[in-house]
Length: 156
Length: 266
Image (cartoon, rainbow over all chains, first blue to last red):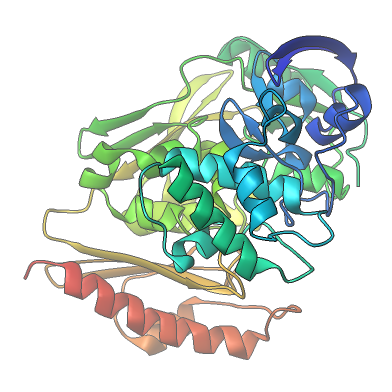
């Protein structure tokens, strides 16, 4: 067992875990943060995307012990004071989700993308390429692209 | 779909990492984990222990000078991709890195990890071979350099000894005025390519390096498509037949040469 000290959504946590525990399972089973969804568990679907030190990462391809002394943000950490994050609000208004399974991963990937490309106008093609690592099986991509552009506009 | 049990070490120095590796031949080194962790999840790899290099300092840097770009083994792929200095010295690197997985993969994946993993369909090993680069490795007897052409032996197998740790990757900058290009064909952007190729052209010399169409990066110093076919050795899988990949070698080889030449100063 190995001790992990990690900041999750602004809260410092410390747990003793098996080294083989994936970050996705650490978040879901140790911390009860079940907003991070686990789809393929080998890095293809993007549903488990979280931010590690501000950068989008696959939590199923990251061991919890690798995040010792790091800061992790999950979908639960985006809303502030009961207000949806602009990316979440844009997804809701644009009907960018159907079953919602892939949504947390998309929202985290988009949050990192818009942080990185702040102030830029993103074409459909750029948005699609940036999100090529996130799969939606309800085929909701049209509205997801619209939601990203709406959020980009609002974040300015 | 969960990793099997393993012992875990997070040494604070390279010397400790080398000693741990020397002591346990079944241990695996963990860099960014973007190849190793999926292999653990799928139980394709069952190392006795992981030696995590995250606490080893001084392995994350991009230094431009001395005729090329020296990259610390633990440098995230995304950092090299974004480095303006590396782009100015060797623009092929950014073009190649943008073909590697997706941004969340490159945020975690390391340059040294991709080279040491030696996936025969990976892009960075092909770029290293096309540029004629080298790596620095550290073992119990000290450091040594290995040229790219002697590094990649077979799929997922390099010429590093079992007790050696890769510490630096050196990408030489092509001569000023050289043309460069990287292309690949994948079913979806970010997937492993069915075939890919890097090209460097300068003053009448041509070097191509194909990936995904043999057991290692396949270098060929010729603009003759027949020579490319003689150099590659593609195999078939669910994504495409060997003949289909040979056709891709022909098409991608012609396109990459056109693009590289259009960027060269003649």
